[in-house]
Length: 329
Picture 1 (tube, helix red, strand yellow):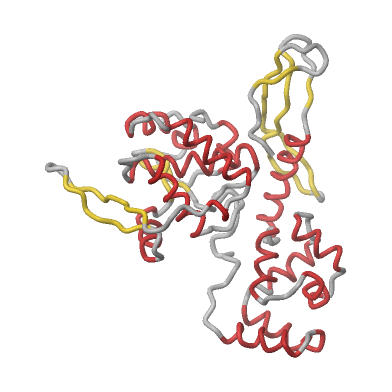
Picture 2 (cartoon, helix red, strand yellow):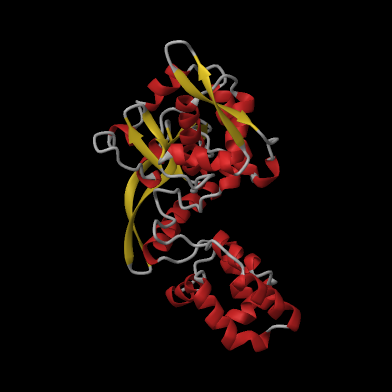
């Protein structure tokens, strides 16, 4: 899917049509959710219409909120669970007691029932998976059993983080250190002499612009509104983790009156971990801000409603509430 155009041609009278949107209440499975519904409105004949991308984006908002509300796993989490234990889709569906077509659709984005969603979610816990494995290992081959036993007894950090959750503050995306690390490397390569303040804003605009057009963030990072604008929440810890995992090195750079952190890439940018829409977003951000100074991008971020409405309490910024009314990109 391409970036949504702000203006396009009306299919009826060929005049200019503008992209507009508003918060509306929608019902899904008997529950109401507020979503930012978009459509094109012709400036001449007033014909209103959508396209397949807008329809998908409108529906995805409801799905994301429903999953978050009921702790139903996201498609990538379901796939990650299967890949963790090195099972095929056919074998995983049998292991879970689901039809293979149903299971495949879950990985592709179809919404599970609450009961199936809770069943899959519970298996993110190693202990629960081990209990299910003990009861159902007769469905697996000897090779598969050996693999799973090895994985279960190795040290492992769980897939699902439901203490904080995949929700409107993470852009309905699981945090990916590899994407955060490579996004930072991309910025350092493309925006020379960029320091923490500007880099924080580039992260914000990349994630929120992608959510605006595709309904999910790129990195899964949360963002907080502080005095200098929107920044990755606990960004000092994030940069420290990226240094620890070998994406960057952090050194002091002395400017006489003050010293600041300078980030140096330690890896080459890996574009293979990003999908087509994510790469499109990165190129858009590069084009938009290639000539912007630190001061200009900071001032631009101070015009964002997400920062204005949350700066007083330094609160987290909701993607669903503020990405669709993004001004800077």
